[in-house]
Image 1 (cartoon, rainbow, N blue to C red):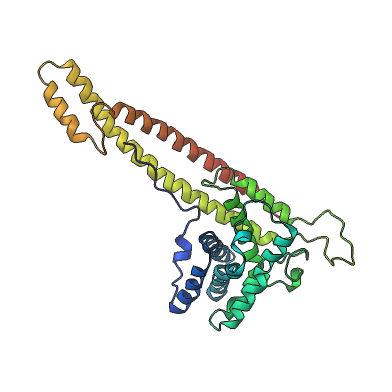
Image 2: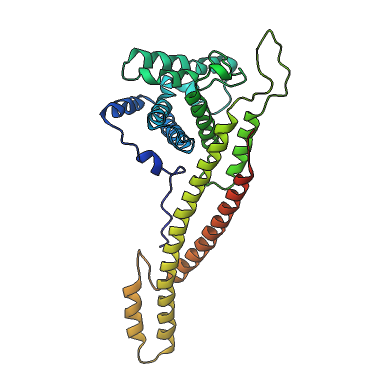
Amino acid sequence: MLKSQQELSFYNPTNLKSYNLDQTMRYQLNVLENLDRITRIHSENVANLTCRICEYLHASKSFTLLCTMSAYMHDIGKAFIPYEILTKPTRLTDEEYEVMKTHTTIGYNMCMKDPKLRPYAAGALYHHECLDGSGYPNGLTEKDIPYFAQIIHIADIYDAIVTKRQYTTHVNISETLRLLIKESEPSRQSIALDTLSTDSKVGKINGKVLNVLFKVVIDDTLYEISGTMEYVKYIKEQLKRLYKIRKFDEKSHNSKHKSEYYTEYMKLLFENGENAENYINVISEYEEALKDKEDLIQKLYKEINIIKQLKAR
């Protein structure tokens, strides 16, 4: 029967794996086991993105490791957020949102109490702060938000949207990137000066870092293309074998003397539950899958061309 494509990770893990996580870092990563599965996976994804953004920014290895580990730890405070709030599928009430926001200060306090986690406390505290002062918990502005927290913030938002929209492919991922571009642009809403001090020329997130994220997303899209191409190669190999079976089947029906020979040869070529009664259907399934995957590859290349045109200010 038709073998489905092995599910690809949405993010290319290659760059992240190039950093050896020594025993100290393994201790920090083990802390993530206290998180629910969805938050833990999100934390790993944000760390992946953060690490690769840092590499495109040509950051030092020490800064990249600080950013990456801080990204792993950024949501550690969610371990103490009530489960019904953390997993609520609908919009949080104002009261619930206030509780959710406390994960930043809870995470900060957790890290500060543990000497091995203390270097990453700022990531937990600042990853929801916005450059225009509209973030939390302290409403800081650009000059007061650590640069590594600005990087984590963008990776955090991007993965949150990807997860919420349940992306399994990078087709139409440019729609999400356009949303982030809007977040990098200054708000057009008038804000009372006694309520919030803000620079009207600054958006919520760092445009320079966002432009680097675009490059990371292109890499991930190319990674998906590569995996899809491998599956296309596999499909073509299977079709070549199945077409040979069909050819022998046709000869067995047209030959009076060698039909048994052709039938036996067909049996040697069958795989995975295939037989003379169902192989034609298997061919159809593979041909349909081939068309779908080749169409997907074309759509992904178009998506890359769209992303290359995007630019945050």
